[in-house]
Length: 508
Image (cartoon, rainbow, N blue to C red; front, side, top):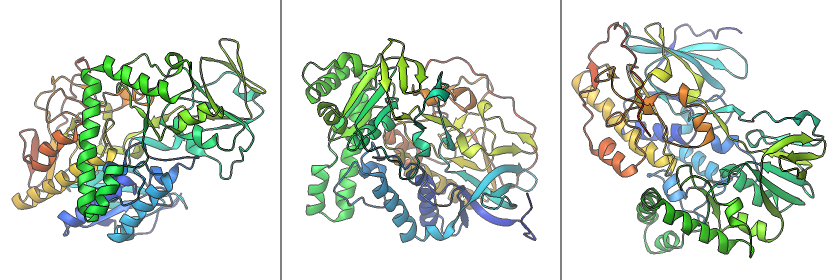
């Protein structure tokens, strides 16, 4: 590995990590609200789009409507509200090109480490060129992670007994082979989450048969792929006004459904069960395959546009098996019940591996930052980590709703610091004994596997990871920037380490 021969480290005000949905959004708000600030986007892959460029499996789409999953400033003008991955990727790249953001992106640049110096009041960042292996150094006043929360290079696949005996193909959706031929093949998809329910109806169009093998059912709801009210509004109003109207409507609808599920879980369960029952064949065992042991929205509900999964089952092209795997065999999978599932292709739609901030090694004044000992401030900064911001979107609403609100607040913070001559800001816990709880109150397996490695959140503001756009609108868009838990400095100086917060057990 060689060192790139820059005579002096390149400097920028804000270094954004990731050129996906969050990074492009962050760049837009910086340009709009802080035009005097310089920024660079570093993207470890060779193309923009993040998730929407990475995933190439059949049927890839959003399970959130694009009137809320799209940017507030960039109207979604397609008829389909539940959009295909290709259309979403085109939307992101069009946004980047329209606002000149694409010119600020540097590809195949992976941030390996970042070191904060209080003496210099800046981050020194080591960047690896993923195409050549060379490294170079950049410095910035602010480090902004828009890298999401999962590993792009590795999906999660549990250890399956006998997998080496299987004579067909085993594929993880995160690493889908180009031009995979599954026409006339028998396919088993292991998993029942959003990826599985997307893959199955798409593959069923060409495969001989597709079986969804699940250990535990998931809540699945049919949603119309087109929003007739939003499409009508576009005929009656300007694109911007129609989009704003549809966005407000759908935010309200999302929050209403979520609150109903939280307050009346048994009623929500009955409604979902009834909707599934009328969409499936007569006498179908709904309570076996679509009746989870947990309440609605303890994990994310899976949306199937126009009931495509149920239609595939009714047509006999797909089926669901609820059982446990005993072992892989040469010709498929043997289950604990003794049933054999023949397969030519097995797809392990078994989830993601979480990795915050792209796995960057952070240090502050020479001390490594242990993320598990940090607490999130307003869902965008970490306790005692100066001039560092990040985006993690909503898990119970459209991810992008958080992006806009958080980036607006970030820009307001920069303006506040400029106004008062501050160079540095760091969140400070009111007490090392402050009770904390997991960062994400979410039951998904990929979240639960990683909770011990993630930062924590508190039990009340400003230390909560809010999952409500209405709450965040009040706090991030309209609330003050200054806070008793924020320490601003005109010039930074070395500080003694602060004791890590005690992880007092608090129920989620």
